[in-house]
Amino acid sequence: MTEYLVTINDNKNNKNYARLIDCIRPQDDGSYAYICITKFQALVLFTDVIPNNIILCIDSAQNSYTNDPASSIAVSSSIIDSFAPINFTTLVDGSIRAIYNVENNIVNWIKINRSSLSNLKFNFKTCNQYILSLAGSTDSITYSDLDNFPFTLQFKIKF
Image (tube, rainbow, N blue to C red):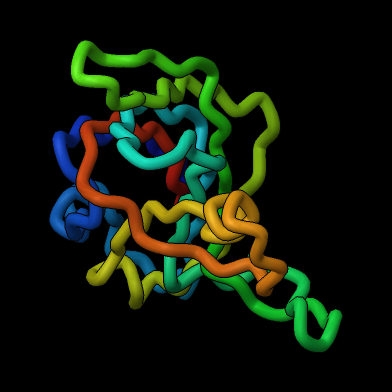
């Protein structure tokens, strides 16, 4: 397997990066590719509440699991990593920016179908439970998409 280091600098998220992966993808017969997140940097504007961790999802993840809160059974998950803010800064208008600068020291290879690389999409979410808990809710943990924000994501991919 050949390993590549890919860095994405983007001023918005939820874009499709298939063309980028197609540029480096060799044309062999392997049915799986593996992705490992190595670095994440971002400035995320939050106007209502201080944010929780950012959750990174890839819909095609094959070996990522979570505990289903309704049944307490491990089920397949699209969540592949989470990032905690390292600092917060308050702007002149009173809004808060969360600063993320995470470098993963642990190698965690996420297995994905190579056929799904043509639709590779990184989704950034945050946990609603944190926001709901401020209002006194005890509902199950859910995740919501974040608005567009500038970020740098570095990952290794191997075929």
